[in-house]
Length: 527
Image (cartoon, rainbow, N blue to C red; front, side, top):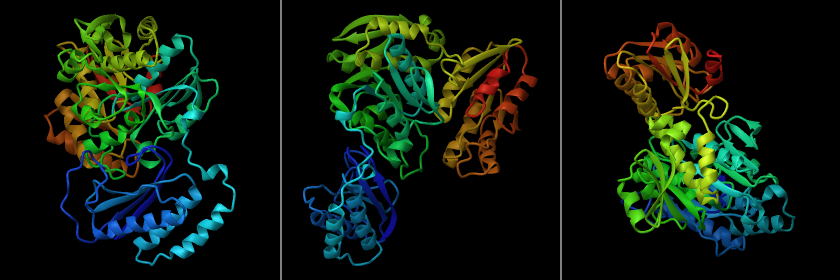
C-alpha cells in the first residue's frame, strides 16, 4: 500500500456532505472484482484487505479521540488501484493527529493507540483557535439567499445574468466567478474566484441580500464547498473538461463532483437542471431539493415527463421563453427581446438565459423582474466581458468567447457559421489551457477544421499549467492534421492571432476566437 495524499476538505465534497479528511492510497494487494455502485465514488466495502485495515485503524483512532460514532467510509477511486478512506472532522488538530496515525500505518509502521490517546488528550486541554475549525460557513452564519452555479460551460454568463436580474430588482448582490468577485457591480477581488475563497468573500459580506457563487470542479475536489447548504443550485451541463485531474477520469465522475451543489441544496429549495443533458439528470436523480428543469427543446422527454407530473419547467415555444407550472404555459419573453441570445441564434446563450430565469424565479424574483433583467442584459465587454462579444470592422465580424473545451468550441463555431454569409469564410482561432488531457487538445484542433474554413492555433504563456508552449501547439497541430484539409497557421498568442486574422479576412468573413488572456485588448482593436 502506497500513500497518495492526505487532503483536508473544508466542507461538502465528493464523498461526504460535511468537512472530511481524505486519505488516498494505492493498493498493491489483491484487488476485489469491481462492484457497480449507485454512483461514481460511492462508498464500498469491496476494497483490498489492506485498505479495510487502514479504515479500521482510523476507526480505532476516532474511538480514542472520543468520536466512536463518526462514520469512516472506503471509496474506490476512478484511478486504477486507488482507494480513499474518508472521515468527517470538526477539530483540525485532532483530525490531523488521526491522519498522521493513518499515514504511519499506510507506510508500514505500527500505530500506538495509547500514545495517540495521550497526544489527543493534550490537544483537548488547549482551547481551539479560529484556524482549528473548518472554513465551512454553517447555515446559522449565512444570512444571504444563496444560489450556486456549476457545470462545464455557461457558469460565468449565468452567474452574471442572475446578478443583473437581482441588481435590476434593487437588491444588494454579491457574486463570485472565474473573472472576479463583485459586490453591487464593484470588483472587490480580481482573478479566478470560482472556488471557495470567492464564495467565502461573498457569503460573509453583511450587506449582501443575494449571494451567487460560480462553483467550479477544482475547488470542490481540492477543498470542498464552503457553505453547509444553498437555497438554489444551477447545473448547466456536463462535457469532458479537466479530466484526468484530481482523480476524476470520466464525465460521470465529473458530474458527481459538480453535483455536490445540488446535493446540498435545501430540501425546501430548488435545483435548476438542464433536462437535455442525460449525465446531469442521472447525477441528480436522488437529490432532496425540488427540481426545476430547463431545455431549449420543448419536446425533451425529461422536460415533458416532469411537466406532465406538475413540475416546474422553462423552455422555448415558438421562439418565446415559456414557464410551465402545473402544466400551464406562461410566456416570459420572446427570444428576440433577450439580447444575449442574438434572437435565438446563439443556442448556448438561450440555455444560459433559461437557466438564469429559472433560478431567479426559484429564488423569489417576480416574472416582471426576470423579464426586465433578461431584456436589459447584453453580451457587451462591459456587461459580459469575453462571452460572445461580437465586433465588426470593415464588413468583418469578430466573435470573442471564453470557449475553453470541445463543447464550447463547437457551440462557438456553430454560432459563427450562423452569422457568416454564404460567400464568407469562418476563421477559427483556437487554444486553451494546458490542464486538459492530450486527447482533448487534439480534438480541439480537429473540431476547428470541421467547423471552420481556416484555422489559427494560438500559443499561451499564462495558462500553460504544466505544459510547454511547444507541447500544446503540437497537440493542436496533430488535431488539425487529422481533420478536414483546411489551411492553418500558428500565432504567438490570441491577440497576435486576431491581428493576423484581420489582415487576411475579407468583408463577409467571420473570425471566431477562443479568448482567455487578451479579450480586453482584442476589444480595444475596435474602439
